[in-house]
Length: 132
Image 1: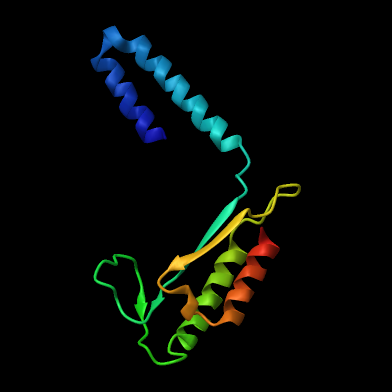
Image 2 (image 1 turned 90 degrees about the vertical axis):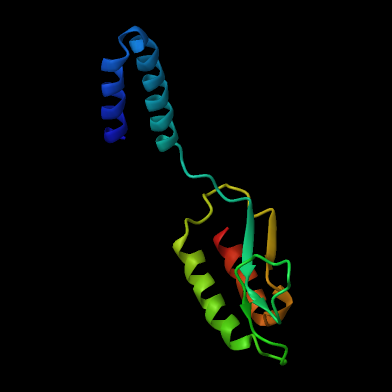
């Protein structure tokens, strides 16, 4: 912010006839920034969980995925490691504020979420329910 204020002050020197208009814009921008900083963080209302496991890459897909092949249980080990990381992310993110409503929706997407073992999905749902 200090860098941008210095740049705007230099601009004021170059544009003396527009000085007041620029000062008014700076005041509005600074008050908006300070007001946004004073607001409490918004509680999430929805969650998207990216599960990147696919049997193969489809020709139209641009999503970040991990191709695990078509053997039964091929994604299990990778999904366990990935879900452990997701649990760490959930624990590190701000929890729901007291009195805030719980999540309204939860979406699993990305690759093929059905390749993730059901107990791991249940653990993610429980973790998100507890946090939000």
